[in-house]
Length: 273
Ligand code: PLP
Image (cartoon, rainbow, N blue to C red; front, side, top):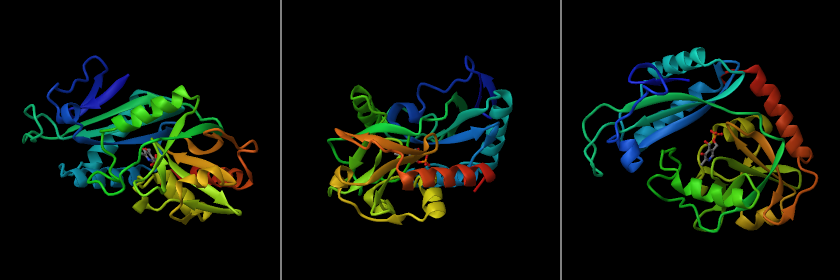
C-alpha cells in the first residue's frame, strides 16, 4: 500500500504524521471519500470543491487542488484496483497540545482503501438523539466523526448498516454517512440542506438526474414512506428494506429501482459530472 503524505508517496510503514497533528488531537481537519473505478476518480471536481468549502468553514488554509489531483493519480497508479475508495484528509497540521493552532503548514494525506459494490438494499435504524442543524460545523465534512461512529456501531448491533438522524426540530436529516430520500405518492423527496444534512455529491446527482424535490419532512415519515433509499459515494443509490421494525419487502420499489438505473447509466457515462 502506497500513501501520499508530505508531498510524495510512502509505504504504509513510512507514511507518518506527527502525534501533535491537530487533526489527531482535536479533530481539526476535513476529509473526502472519493470512489475510484478502474483507477479513475469519480466526480473529483465536486469532491475538491467540497473539501475547499469545508476547509474554509474551519478557517484552514486553502487546499491545493492541483496537488491533490496529482496525489490521487499517484496513489491510484501505485495501487491498482477495479473499485476503490480514495481518502483525502487535510488537517490543521502540527500544533502545540491544546485547541490553539500552530503556524505549521497543513497536513495532506491521500490513501486508498478497499471497497465493494454494495447490495441493492439494506436495513437502517433511527438514532435516538438529534443532529444539530444550526451548529458551527453543520454541513461541514470534518474529521470529527465520533458521533457518526457511535451511531453506526449502535445500528450494526441491531443488524443494520445505517442510522438516520432527525434534527433538533424533529425533521428528517441524514444518515451517519449518507443522505436519505423517500418516495411519497410516486414522488421523490429529500431533506433540504437547512435540515443540517451534508451537501452529498450523490444526493446532488440524484436530485439533478431523477428530479427529486427538497422538502422538509417530519422524522416519522420513515414510518409511512412508500419507499426509502440512501445515497452516498460508496453506496451509490441503496434501497432500505427494513426501517427500524418496519419491513419494506418490495425494496427496491419501482421509483428507487428507476433511480438506481438512471444513476448507474449516467455515472457510468461521465467520469467527472
Ligand atoms: N452525509 C454524511 C454525514 C456523510 O458522511 C456522507 C458521505 O460522505 C454523505 C452524507 C453522503 O455524501 P456523498 O454522496 O458526497 O458521499
